[in-house]
Image (tube, rainbow, N blue to C red; front, side, top):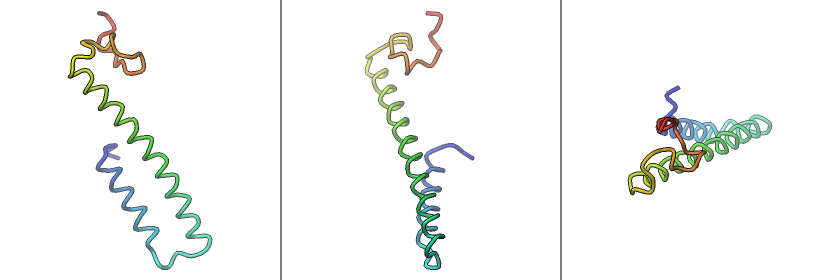
Length: 83
């Protein structure tokens, strides 16, 4: 696994292709829908976390805080623990 947004995009398109299979019916289709729903839920969490990281990076670059110890505790990376 690459663990990046490119891979997430690939996985989402794989799920889309799986749902587009005209041979899927009944329980098999229901199973694919459940899998896809689970992937969507996890994907939304990954994207939300990425957005939070981006906002924190933008806030830091805008001068909102100079070191991680000035950031909200949940956003601290540990780089500035000794400052």
